[in-house]
Image 1 (cartoon, rainbow, N blue to C red):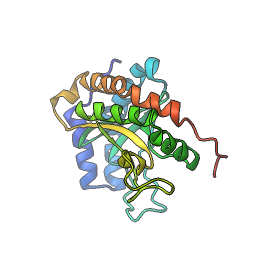
Image 2: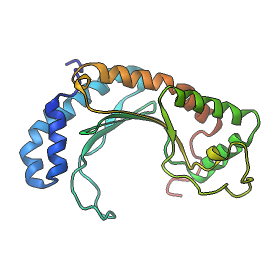
Image 3: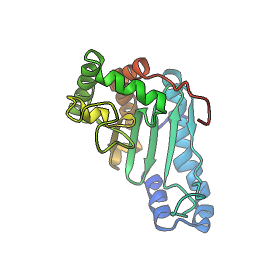
Length: 214
Protein backbone atom coordinates (compact mmCIF):
# COMPACT_ATOMS: atom_id res chain seq x y z
CA UNK A 1 0.00 0.00 0.00
CA UNK A 2 1.04 3.58 -0.59
CA UNK A 3 2.15 5.69 2.35
CA UNK A 4 -0.68 7.95 3.52
CA UNK A 5 0.77 9.28 6.75
CA UNK A 6 -0.13 8.71 10.39
CA UNK A 7 -3.68 9.24 11.60
CA UNK A 8 -4.89 11.01 14.74
CA UNK A 9 -5.42 7.51 16.19
CA UNK A 10 -1.68 6.90 15.73
CA UNK A 11 -0.95 9.97 17.82
CA UNK A 12 -3.53 8.86 20.40
CA UNK A 13 -1.77 5.50 20.76
CA UNK A 14 1.46 7.19 21.83
CA UNK A 15 -0.39 9.65 24.07
CA UNK A 16 -1.90 6.65 25.82
CA UNK A 17 1.47 4.91 26.08
CA UNK A 18 3.01 8.02 27.63
CA UNK A 19 0.23 8.02 30.25
CA UNK A 20 0.34 4.27 30.88
CA UNK A 21 3.69 2.73 29.93
CA UNK A 22 2.77 -0.75 31.09
CA UNK A 23 2.60 -4.27 29.70
CA UNK A 24 -1.22 -4.43 29.95
CA UNK A 25 -1.60 -1.21 27.92
CA UNK A 26 0.93 -2.41 25.35
CA UNK A 27 -0.65 -5.83 24.95
CA UNK A 28 -4.12 -4.33 24.63
CA UNK A 29 -2.92 -1.88 22.00
CA UNK A 30 -0.44 -4.09 20.11
CA UNK A 31 -2.78 -4.51 17.14
CA UNK A 32 -3.25 -0.72 16.98
CA UNK A 33 0.52 -0.24 17.09
CA UNK A 34 1.05 -2.69 14.23
CA UNK A 35 -1.62 -1.16 12.00
CA UNK A 36 -1.62 2.51 12.96
CA UNK A 37 2.05 3.12 13.77
CA UNK A 38 4.37 0.45 12.37
CA UNK A 39 2.64 -0.23 9.04
CA UNK A 40 2.78 3.44 7.90
CA UNK A 41 6.49 3.53 8.80
CA UNK A 42 7.09 0.37 6.78
CA UNK A 43 5.22 1.88 3.82
CA UNK A 44 7.22 5.10 4.11
CA UNK A 45 10.54 3.28 4.25
CA UNK A 46 9.55 1.19 1.25
CA UNK A 47 8.96 4.33 -0.80
CA UNK A 48 12.20 5.96 0.36
CA UNK A 49 14.38 2.87 -0.20
CA UNK A 50 15.25 3.40 -3.87
CA UNK A 51 16.84 6.79 -3.26
CA UNK A 52 17.89 6.62 0.38
CA UNK A 53 18.60 2.95 1.02
CA UNK A 54 16.81 0.22 2.90
CA UNK A 55 15.23 1.33 6.15
CA UNK A 56 15.46 -0.38 9.52
CA UNK A 57 12.90 0.12 12.28
CA UNK A 58 14.09 0.13 15.89
CA UNK A 59 12.55 -2.28 18.37
CA UNK A 60 9.73 -0.76 20.46
CA UNK A 61 11.17 -2.17 23.68
CA UNK A 62 13.53 -0.06 25.76
CA UNK A 63 16.83 -1.39 27.10
CA UNK A 64 16.37 -0.62 30.78
CA UNK A 65 19.45 -2.45 32.09
CA UNK A 66 21.52 0.69 32.59
CA UNK A 67 18.74 3.27 32.80
CA UNK A 68 17.10 4.88 35.81
CA UNK A 69 13.90 5.05 33.78
CA UNK A 70 12.53 1.51 33.87
CA UNK A 71 9.49 2.16 31.64
CA UNK A 72 9.53 -0.78 29.24
CA UNK A 73 8.32 0.77 25.97
CA UNK A 74 9.60 3.55 23.74
CA UNK A 75 7.11 6.36 23.25
CA UNK A 76 8.11 6.81 19.62
CA UNK A 77 8.77 4.74 16.53
CA UNK A 78 12.10 5.39 14.86
CA UNK A 79 14.02 4.13 11.86
CA UNK A 80 17.32 4.62 10.07
CA UNK A 81 17.92 4.80 6.34
CA UNK A 82 20.67 2.78 4.65
CA UNK A 83 22.21 5.81 2.93
CA UNK A 84 22.02 7.92 6.09
CA UNK A 85 19.11 9.47 7.93
CA UNK A 86 16.98 9.03 11.04
CA UNK A 87 13.18 9.33 11.24
CA UNK A 88 11.06 9.43 14.40
CA UNK A 89 7.31 9.73 14.94
CA UNK A 90 5.62 10.25 18.32
CA UNK A 91 2.83 12.13 20.03
CA UNK A 92 5.04 15.22 19.67
CA UNK A 93 5.13 14.98 15.88
CA UNK A 94 7.67 14.05 13.23
CA UNK A 95 11.44 14.45 13.41
CA UNK A 96 14.18 13.76 10.88
CA UNK A 97 17.94 14.02 11.16
CA UNK A 98 21.16 13.18 9.37
CA UNK A 99 24.88 13.52 10.01
CA UNK A 100 27.45 12.04 12.37
CA UNK A 101 25.70 11.61 15.71
CA UNK A 102 28.65 10.18 17.64
CA UNK A 103 32.24 10.25 16.44
CA UNK A 104 35.04 7.87 17.39
CA UNK A 105 38.32 9.45 18.49
CA UNK A 106 39.90 9.18 15.03
CA UNK A 107 36.83 10.80 13.45
CA UNK A 108 36.90 13.61 16.00
CA UNK A 109 40.53 14.26 15.21
CA UNK A 110 39.81 14.56 11.47
CA UNK A 111 36.70 16.64 12.19
CA UNK A 112 38.63 19.16 14.28
CA UNK A 113 41.54 19.35 11.86
CA UNK A 114 39.12 20.08 9.04
CA UNK A 115 37.37 22.81 11.05
CA UNK A 116 40.74 24.34 11.89
CA UNK A 117 41.83 24.28 8.24
CA UNK A 118 41.33 27.68 6.62
CA UNK A 119 39.93 26.08 3.47
CA UNK A 120 37.57 23.39 4.76
CA UNK A 121 36.63 25.12 8.03
CA UNK A 122 34.91 28.13 6.40
CA UNK A 123 33.17 25.72 4.01
CA UNK A 124 31.52 23.96 6.95
CA UNK A 125 30.69 27.26 8.64
CA UNK A 126 28.89 28.42 5.49
CA UNK A 127 26.97 25.15 5.15
CA UNK A 128 25.79 25.37 8.76
CA UNK A 129 24.65 28.97 8.42
CA UNK A 130 22.73 28.17 5.24
CA UNK A 131 20.87 25.31 6.93
CA UNK A 132 20.07 27.35 10.02
CA UNK A 133 18.62 30.13 7.85
CA UNK A 134 16.29 27.56 6.29
CA UNK A 135 14.99 26.49 9.72
CA UNK A 136 17.12 23.38 10.14
CA UNK A 137 18.96 22.98 13.44
CA UNK A 138 22.60 21.90 13.35
CA UNK A 139 23.65 20.42 16.66
CA UNK A 140 25.44 17.54 18.40
CA UNK A 141 24.62 15.03 21.11
CA UNK A 142 27.40 16.46 23.24
CA UNK A 143 29.81 19.40 23.24
CA UNK A 144 32.91 20.36 25.22
CA UNK A 145 32.65 23.32 27.56
CA UNK A 146 35.84 24.80 26.19
CA UNK A 147 38.24 24.34 23.28
CA UNK A 148 39.57 20.81 22.66
CA UNK A 149 43.17 20.20 23.62
CA UNK A 150 45.60 21.78 21.18
CA UNK A 151 43.21 24.46 19.91
CA UNK A 152 42.98 28.10 21.07
CA UNK A 153 39.96 29.18 23.09
CA UNK A 154 39.56 32.21 20.80
CA UNK A 155 39.50 30.13 17.62
CA UNK A 156 37.23 31.78 15.00
CA UNK A 157 35.23 28.54 14.69
CA UNK A 158 35.29 27.58 18.37
CA UNK A 159 31.58 26.68 18.50
CA UNK A 160 32.08 24.03 15.82
CA UNK A 161 35.32 22.80 17.39
CA UNK A 162 33.55 22.15 20.69
CA UNK A 163 31.07 19.71 19.12
CA UNK A 164 31.62 15.96 19.55
CA UNK A 165 29.51 15.14 16.51
CA UNK A 166 27.41 17.07 14.00
CA UNK A 167 23.84 16.44 12.92
CA UNK A 168 21.19 18.38 11.04
CA UNK A 169 17.76 18.10 12.65
CA UNK A 170 14.22 19.25 11.93
CA UNK A 171 11.00 18.66 13.87
CA UNK A 172 7.38 19.39 13.02
CA UNK A 173 4.57 19.32 15.60
CA UNK A 174 1.41 17.25 15.23
CA UNK A 175 -1.13 18.54 12.71
CA UNK A 176 -3.63 17.27 10.18
CA UNK A 177 -0.79 17.16 7.62
CA UNK A 178 0.52 14.03 9.36
CA UNK A 179 -2.41 12.07 7.97
CA UNK A 180 -1.40 12.78 4.37
CA UNK A 181 1.61 12.12 2.15
CA UNK A 182 3.19 15.34 3.47
CA UNK A 183 5.53 13.59 5.97
CA UNK A 184 7.29 11.85 3.07
CA UNK A 185 7.69 15.11 1.14
CA UNK A 186 9.10 16.91 4.17
CA UNK A 187 11.56 14.09 4.87
CA UNK A 188 12.73 13.97 1.24
CA UNK A 189 13.10 17.77 1.11
CA UNK A 190 15.12 17.70 4.33
CA UNK A 191 17.44 14.94 3.14
CA UNK A 192 18.07 16.80 -0.11
CA UNK A 193 18.71 20.07 1.72
CA UNK A 194 21.25 18.59 4.17
CA UNK A 195 23.09 16.57 1.51
CA UNK A 196 25.94 19.13 1.15
CA UNK A 197 26.58 19.04 4.91
CA UNK A 198 26.64 15.24 4.95
CA UNK A 199 28.90 15.31 1.89
CA UNK A 200 31.37 17.53 3.75
CA UNK A 201 31.36 15.12 6.70
CA UNK A 202 31.84 12.09 4.45
CA UNK A 203 34.74 13.76 2.64
CA UNK A 204 36.52 15.31 5.62
CA UNK A 205 35.71 12.82 8.40
CA UNK A 206 34.51 9.52 6.94
CA UNK A 207 34.02 6.25 8.81
CA UNK A 208 36.11 5.28 11.79
CA UNK A 209 39.19 3.14 11.22
CA UNK A 210 39.36 2.06 14.84
CA UNK A 211 38.88 -1.65 15.62
CA UNK A 212 35.34 -2.66 16.52
CA UNK A 213 34.75 -2.39 20.25
CA UNK A 214 37.56 0.12 20.71
